[in-house]
Image 1 (tube, rainbow, N blue to C red):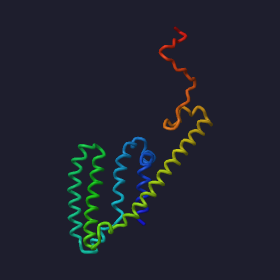
Image 2: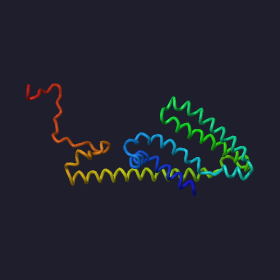
Image 3: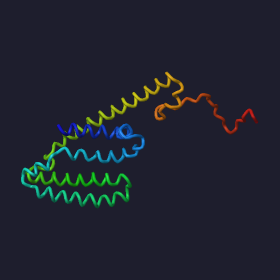
Image 4: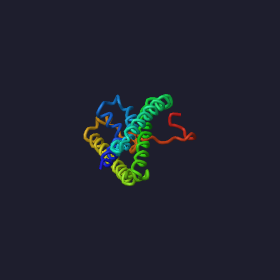
Length: 193
């Protein structure tokens, strides 16, 4: 049940991260959407509460060791990723170390519960939820693009002076040339000479 909320929210925010940043913080923060998207990739690691399972099985020391491993791997990955990836580097390093921690927890829970790694979490169900969320996000993008394009077209028709402010979207429409030009070939002479 938590997976439905987390994975659905993650996919929605991945798709609309730029718009969300601009809407919440202003145009100045448009570039931060890429960092936000990388951090969103850590959300699936929060689905299982394996730390509490290990605490209930008296495996608190293992959680402490794994936390130290995560801290050290995060520091090392930060040094590497900041140099190679720039501002996105710390986000990549943090997400990578979170997944190292999560894999260690799943492995320990697997051995403590005497279950195979593939049976610790409902992987197929999570993959289905992710697929449905991706399809829903693709549909939402199409609807959003259609709504924005339709609204700007209605505004341009209602007030022609808005054509400067609301240009047609270049991806779907080519702006109409007010005076169509004839294509000249090099062998044609212009009337001017």
